[in-house]
Length: 81
Image (tube, rainbow, N blue to C red; front, side):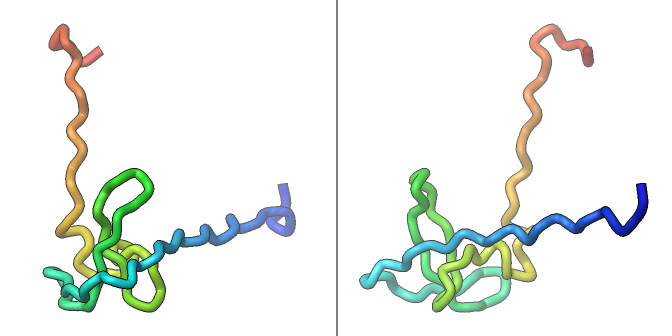
């Protein structure tokens, strides 16, 4: 296959969230930037950047500090298979 037929994936649009009118400005513990806390449709609290409504996790240089490690479920028999 020739390189002329390969395409880069389309950029993924970052979802935006509506900031409530009564929201108070807070500050990120990682980078100190101003953020608003909003509730996602799934019911989770999420920090968003003022003015854009984009998740602050996608713009914060310290976002990895706040990432939770997902625990891999163990096999109940104790074997690795």
